Every structure is written in C-alpha cells, then in structure tokens.
Length: 236
Image (cartoon, rainbow, N blue to C red; front, side, top):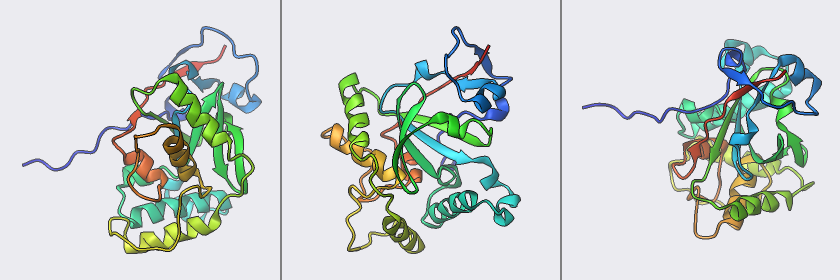
C-alpha cells in the first residue's frame, strides 16, 4: 500500500531564473528598476485575467525567520504557522498571501491597510519570494474579467484584522472540525477571501472552496484550481 502523494506544485523561484529562462522576444517598456537589475520577469503572456497569484516568502522557511526583526516577515510566518496548526500540509501552508491577477504585471490584493492595485514587481525585486499562479479551467474571458471587476469593486476598503484574528482562533481548534462561529466571513477584506468572493460573485454555480472562510492554504489545496506553468523571461 502506498501513502498519499500530494500533487506537484508549479511555482517560480528567482534562484532558478538564470538557469530556467528564455530570452524575451520584446522589451517591456517600463519595468521596476530593481527588477530590471535582477534581469528576469514571469512570462505574463501565459497568464489570464482573474488568475490567482499565491506568494511565499523564502526566508519564512529558514531558522532565521524566528529571530528576524522584519515585522512583515514575522506576520507572514504567523500566517504560515496558523495554517499548519489548522491542519494544512506544509506545502499548502507556506503560501501566506493571495492576489488577483489583472494584466500587465498588475494585481489586486488585500494587504494592510486596505485593498489596492499593486504589481508583481513588489514580490520580484528582492528575489526573496516564490510566485505560484493558479487558474480555474474552462472559464471564458468574460468570467475572467468579471473576477477582476469584482475584486476591483473592493478598492480602498479596509483590511479586516478582526477576521484574521477569528481565523487564528479557529485554527487552534482545527479547520477540519465543523465549528460554530458568529462571524460571516463573506466579503471580509483579507487576501484569500478577496479572491474567493470575487470568484464566487463572478462565476455563478462554481465554488472553489466549500467553507465560509478561505485561507491562502485553502486556495493552494483546492482541486477546483489548477497550477499554471509560467516561464521566466530574461530581459535584454
């Protein structure tokens, strides 16, 4: 008898960009200066509007993370630990942040203190993040743009720390245990819930997760999304 084998995850690691890239066929006109110095970008021609971007910070998986003074790193590490405590596999729990891909490196994300339009360059310029792209198969382009529009409807809404604290408390009991709680997570503004609600509001009759709340680890593990294979492009 063989044990359970987790699906292989496809993601971009900046450490492997030089050895696993191909030349860009055209020069992107405007690229973050630090990313241009790095010299590589994801091939966004392989992405579609409404795709999911999952983020993992590489330093979170080292012993240095526990004593690091960077508050954002500590926050990321706490999310990872809560997801593991809640019952997620390490391979899924390591993804601590989620965003909605728009186009041309732009993303919509819920991050402190509010929902914003950001860009991938934030997670590329220091070469310290892993990037993983996921997509719902068989969606037409109209549904994909509806996901984007639904996410953008939440622009400037306040990041919901209360919901994050509720998730932390639920993780202590275990996400696998049906739990009664007095909080409706729908439309709560934190990263993974933003993607889940945008998807559910745009694509009627399809659910990417069957719970009231959704963590980045849930979006990593759900079989209703598939990983998108994205190549590194070497900038001229």
